[in-house]
Amino acid sequence: MQLSELWRLYEADKRIQGFSTRTLRAYALQHKMLMQELGNIYIAEVS
Image 1 (cartoon, rainbow, N blue to C red):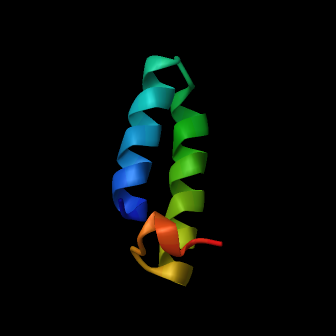
Image 2: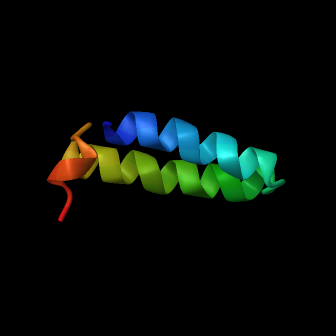
């Protein structure tokens, strides 16, 4: 599973849990920054 796939699952879970739009936007920004730094790598590559 790649980071982008993991993000989609994580975001969907947080929406179901009722996280606010602002919180989700902040999380999305952090994810974007991580993707810019690492690229869309596979989770197994993260150590």
